[in-house]
Image 1 (cartoon, rainbow, N blue to C red):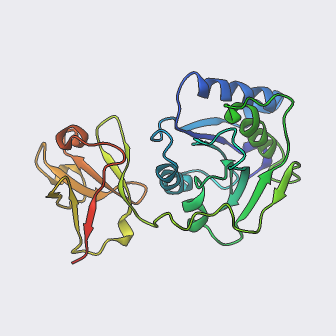
Image 2: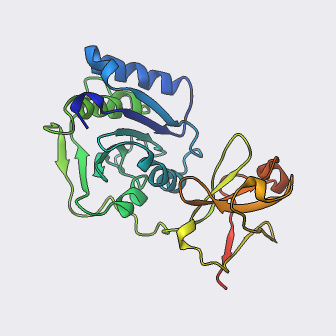
Length: 256
């Protein structure tokens, strides 16, 4: 990929007006090169403040974007605090800019080889205590895109592993996202399930199917979604309304 085509991908738990403000700052920082770096909306509605859900969703979806992509990832309940560091992760040939609070944990596990973690040491002239997405992460992401991933100043390598979160499960047995159709995406990788394993939610076993049309209208089923996660859906129906649950709801996997 050439330097001029690095896209910038927005991944956050807030919508308007904040994403608009971040885009405005990105365009300002990119200047005359803005047209060369498309700004792509991935998630503006990660479950609020849910770093674990954000970590799962980011790792599952990042592969849809080409190497060289720069992600601005803002799921940041500790924004402005001294307890969390702002940082940049390079993994899988992609750049991820955001808080080092665990939101990159599953991405680092997915692409551990040659992964790099840096703390952002640069401080902008104006830094709001509550909006690092606009004032810090957007300018850093624009700088990485403009530089083609090389020669980035204001970063300090981290090697002590303090930013890692080993307490996060590889497979998060809960709903991590509900889309506008009411499909319930879980944090369980389909590849981790054996053929006989049972998926239970709200006290009922959900049968497996390959796709929507393989079950009757209105019937619940679980299947491997397009990013490799187990997803609970209903053919021509709304699984979220049928079950009365949403992000954060637990699911049970029974090994058979």
